Amino acid sequence: MKKLSLVVAAAAAGALMLAGCSSTTGGGSTTTTPPSEAPTTTATVDLAQCLTDAAATVTSGTSGNTSSSITPSTGFDAGAKIGVSLPQKTSQNWVEAEGMFNTGLTAAGYVPTVQFATNGVSDQQNQISAMIQNGVKVLVVGAVDGSQLGGQLDQAKQAGITVIAYDRLLMNTNSVDMYVAYDNYKVGQLQGQALLQGMLASQGAPPFNIELIAGSPDDANSKPFFEGAMSVIQPGIDCGALNVLSGQTTQTQAATQGWLAKNAQTRMDAILAANYTSAKLNGILSPNDTLARAALASLSSAGKSDDKTVITGQDSETASIPLIMQGTQYMTIYKNTQGLVDEIVKIIGLLQQGQPVPINDTTSYDNGTKVVPTDLLTPQVVTAANAAQVYANDATRLPCTQTPAPASCNG
Ligand code: BGC
Image (cartoon, rainbow, N blue to C red; front, top):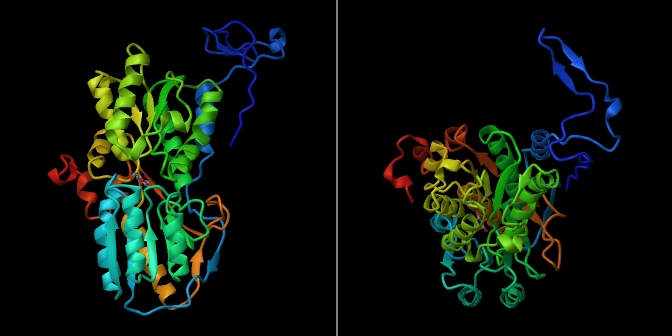
């Protein structure tokens, strides 16, 4: 994490720049006051520069830090059964994945079973056990709670099944072969960067008031999302350019159990009532679009829509794209689900033939038991400025960039 070392003005609050200060005279010339009077411990913090610098620490581009391969399978029947276990339908990406897996795996000649763990952890445990009994050769798991499946995954390993963690890492187990996901830490960094850039562009001069929302604590992704974002935001808090009036700055304090919109909205309602009846709320870090819309509902019911709060998101949900085009939600992240599913289908093809599977990260995703070989895809930032371009090949999302958006985009 980048650290800013600052010497805050020792003089009284409101002290102006004493050192090397320039002033324009009536005749238009510029004079410079010598710094002789300035105490050596005094420096003025340029808050906007502090935020600009923090935002600049994030680079766009490809994820992954190495190029390698693993060979977890010796091969299996071309028409094998494949199990795909998904969590609850807490965002549009999961819903879309169901059809994409069924279509992609069937077209590739496999017999897929794709299930949602609608009733939580025990539902998912039972579904995975049944898939193992049913003789699947590969298990693709998007976990409700990545640390609660150890027993089932050990059974899968004993049965010679290749286990792939899908989108969410499987924690505290040796029985996971690889992880395939968009780079979650990068998602958080991009959200943090966009939040700062969005506020600098539309909220006047800092300091800014912000609030933080984190994802569900049982989802392993919530940590890299939050930590990635805070790697950009924390320097702004440290230099005094950002204030969190609620004081809720830890992932635990900001958590949204179950990724449920109503939980985020209830928390935001309380924060607004306690801290923002007169203060302006300039920005909200939201980890995904569902929770961004919950935050917007909260702002609206508190009569704070005029704050034009800069709000982040993720998932490119069709219900959020029109809000982004109108400027109500500032940004989202595109993690093209079709791309992720296609990647998994391609990997299963290599496993079926017993061939090496390429990976591009061998260091970042430690699940508590081992560093899991990872295949990372690159997430993309979407704002009103680039939405039509980013969604150009996505027939579901592109129409939502039009004004007015078709009714199909409204969730
Ligand atoms: C996914 C996000 C999603 C969230 C809630 C996370 O694990 O990576 O894309 O918004 O779950 O469904």
